[in-house]
Each structure stands twice: as structure tokens, then as C-alpha cells.
Length: 234
Image (cartoon, rainbow, N blue to C red; front, side):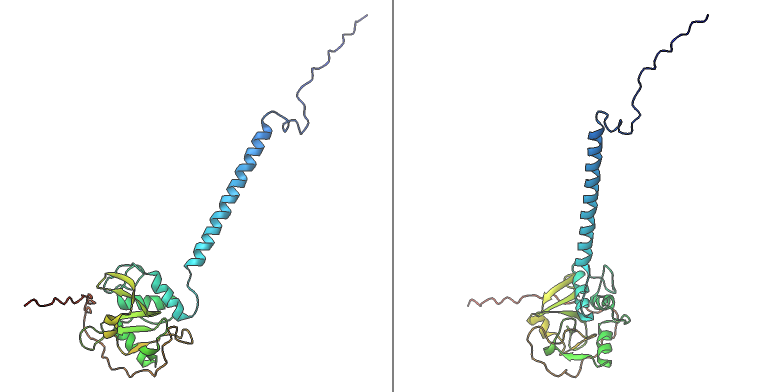
């Protein structure tokens, strides 16, 4: 008669329950670390997007065409003066005013300072310099009546222009030196604010008398040299 042999029981093995790995030593710490890394990444991304949105909002120009032109010209401050330059990093005087208005939405072709003056006069946009508004184009002569220079009125008695004397785009006060060479008529390429911003009285536009200069490179803007009076010692 055959003897039956009992089969020894199988030793218990690792648990196959789905929560066995979650309960393993160290797995909780790894999960917390991954969660912290994910939160850090998301926070950094949100901060970056916020900074980008802020930069885009602060660099934009808004308002009327004239206001946007002033904003565009001001954004070029410090860019070098180069004769014939009209953007986007180098400018001469008429190149800056052309670029600023072009970027602001005025559809016009490039013109020299004299050409911009003639453009405004031919379209009935000549205005008196006693009734300036931000965005008006200011014209100057250094040598007896012909147009040598153009800038853009920035309001509050100030002008933005590409200065050949200083070699860059600057914002400057319209002091007695500039006013002594300023034509009596400015040009308003596009409508801006409804009232002057500096309290000047409205006056009728003067009849343009200046002749556009014909020639090659315009003369450089003269430096403002102070006059020193030395008393005579007899």
C-alpha cells in the first residue's frame, strides 16, 4: 500500500496588495519631494508669465496717433545719430520723426525735414508755434531762413529730436537758443489732444515763409556755446 506524502505549505511571499508599495519604507518621502518640485516649477512659470505680461504692457504706446508718436520717439532716446538713418536703431532728425509717426500708424512716405514741412503745409496742417500740442513737428534753421532741423514736441516746453550736435536722440527743453531758431509754423501730421497742454493761447497759424533747403547732407546742429564776458581791466 502506497504511503501518501503531505505537500509542505508554500512559504508566504511578498504581498500583492496594491498598497504594498505605497507602504514601503521611503516611498512617502519620494512622493512629497516630487510634489514640492512640481509646485516649485508651476510657481516659477506663473511668475515668469506675470513678468512677461507686465513688460509687454509697459512697453506699449497707446492713445491718439500723435500721443503714440511721442511715445515711440521717446523710446528711441539714446540711439545714435547717423545721417540718413530712419530706424530702427539709428536716426537723423527727419528719420526719427518719420519713424515715430510711421510706428504710430500714420501712412506716409519718408521725407527730409524740408519735405515734412512741405507735406504739412500742402495738407493744411500748419499751426502756430503759439498753439503747440504734443506730437507737433517743430522746424528750425541755423543759417538764415532755410529748414535745417526737425523735432517732435513732447509737451511742457520740451522736444524730442535726433541731435547731430550731441550725437544721439535726446529730449531737451525748448530754451531761448532753440526758440531763436524755431520757425513760426509747426506741422500737426495727425490730430492729438483737443486742447494745448501747456496753457498757451490759441492763435491763428502763421503763413509759412521758410523755403525748403535743397542740397545733400544738412548742416550739423550747432553746439550751444555760452558767451563769457570778461571785464576790461584798464
